[in-house]
Image 1 (cartoon, helix red, strand yellow):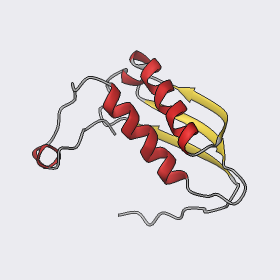
Image 2: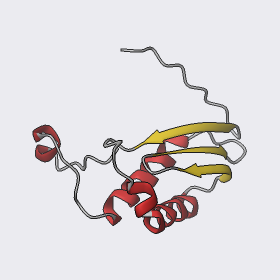
Image 3: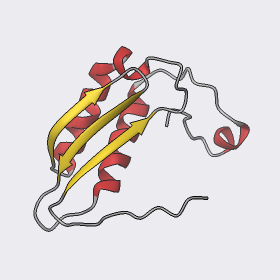
Image 4: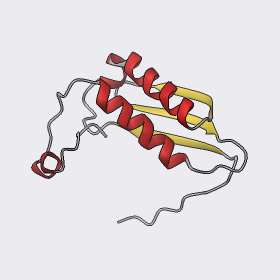
Length: 107
């Protein structure tokens, strides 16, 4: 398993690439309104600035700047992923382990 280093810079600017699990689908663009709503909800709960964003069918790239004194980008991603997952229809294939934990298989 790779040994990742993560930067924790309060008020910093971060680049992210986030992909859905099933890369052969176009879920992100097909459900773009749901994705936008998830981003808006996360922004209301924990403000941040989206400096740039590119939405592709199966993944997205974005550049965020967090508020001064705040480096908690994981909670924002959790909020976005959870909100989006709750909004889109359950169509993905899920392994038994995810079914047992009642988890979606989107991300």
